[in-house]
Image (cartoon, rainbow, N blue to C red):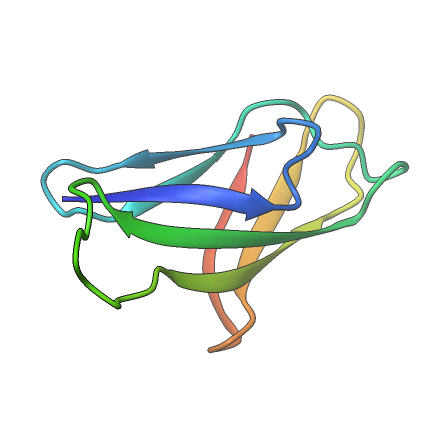
Length: 96
């Protein structure tokens, strides 16, 4: 089983990650509203770790950069998209 940790870029606590128990995937959620006027781009670093410790192993945790783009929209509606910087593939785009 994996756990996912935001290791950089979440100093304000705007995001959280939940591990899906069926797929073992990390699901990134917005915990607090994002304000385009204050920040229109957030750089996160997410690390995947084993829940069980790796005693006696030289294995390292795997990290990826994730770019969150906040779009300017009318008041009352927010939208963002997540971009994996390694693959440059959009993983999610949704209204919040």
